[in-house]
Amino acid sequence: MPDKVEFIDVTVRDGNQSLWGGTGLTTAQMLEMAPLLDRVGFKAIETITGILFKLAVTHHKENPWDKIRSIRRAVTKTPLRYGGTFRRFIGFKRMPDSVTALVAKTAASCGLRSTWIVDGMLDVAFLHKAAGWAKQGGFEEVVVALPYTISPVHTDEFYAEKARKIAECPDVDALYVKDQGGLFTPERVQTLVPQVLKNSLGKPVEIHVHCNTGLGPLCLLEAVKQGIRTVQTAIPPLANGTSHPSVFNILRNLRYMGYSTGLDEEALERIATILRDIAKKEGRPEGVIPEYDYFYYKHQVPGGMMSTLRRQLSEVRKESLMDKVLEEVVQVRQELGYPIMVTPFSQFVGVQAAYNIISGKRYSVIPDGVIEYAAGWYGQPIAPIDPNVLDKIAHAPKAKTIFGKELPQLSIKELREQLGIGPTVSDEEFLLRYAMSDKEIDDMFESIRQGTAGV
Image (tube, rainbow, N blue to C red; front, side, top):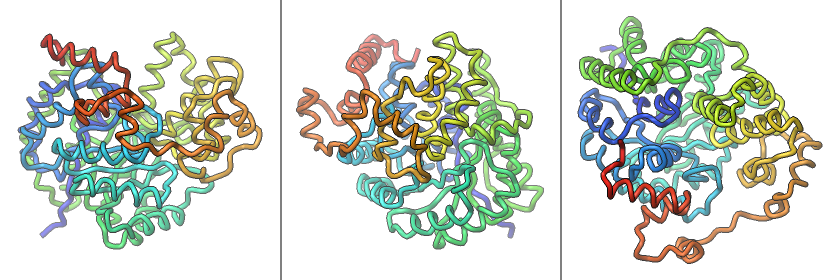
């Protein structure tokens, strides 16, 4: 009997973020597809992350917790998957451990059964702690990411050691190699994946690749050849481009390679038709395999951040500066000690690069996240920060409130008192108000009352 390859669907989460800026797919649109998604036979359906919580509130005026519950009622067999850094929830501010634990508990209680955790520092002690929060909160499966990057310090041996140490945690059920920037080549897959599998202590390993350079499908198939048996794919039109390989392309190639999948392809075709109808109606793009672009291996900006950068530049009418910003990203990343270009560090590097170019004076404006990163609030950088840049960061106006100070570990009760949110307000609403503005939340509730949410 042929080896079976299992599939994680990332269409509505990462496909949506990478190609539609995260603003696609209302609850009603999700519910139209939900029974079909459940029928396909996916191992899990990646459903929501922090940024999609925010966009549900601000763009669709929908309550994201209600959205999860609605999808869960319609998807009865397949686990729904959450994902995040477990250092923050919505936006980029660090949050106390008490909030992280409450997010995990609340998300699981709404029906999310699986979660991935990514930490750009690959701080093993933190990842063990975060996995514990997830399990204690009620998640049935915890998958920890090994975010891939290219730098002098991120060698195969580096990832092998991290894989072994992460897998030692009893709360970690699986690992996944996360190529969020589409940087893999088949040659690197051939050396890296066997090292990760060898050091995963027998725990399953998934593969996650983007198509930024056009090599995503080839690299994913090479990972299967090297022994990985769980792959992440998307359904067109939310596949390819800066998104993930198309499930149809991978299915066809795996069949020719002698593997089985057990997926319902008729259900997949119907989902693709629904998505294409949405794209046509709303004027949204369909992902296509891009031309090979070596520059991606330099700036390493992942798909979701690429669309965010374009949107942010367009909002200030500076779209023409995109190439200069990407060139600046290369320099900023090197100066900051080669952070892995994954949330939130891709945002920190990208925003700093944009400020440097738009202002015309490098590091004259420094975001809080960059200061917190340099101060060690996210763990120690894997390589040293350039001394001159570190000096500029340390002398930024906000630095004196961050450097040398620990993140205050307030309890939920203390935070409620601090924010004036009484005990009659649900944990769900508290978390939204903690992470977002009262106006954003009030506008959402008003739209729901008026029946205009999701329109």
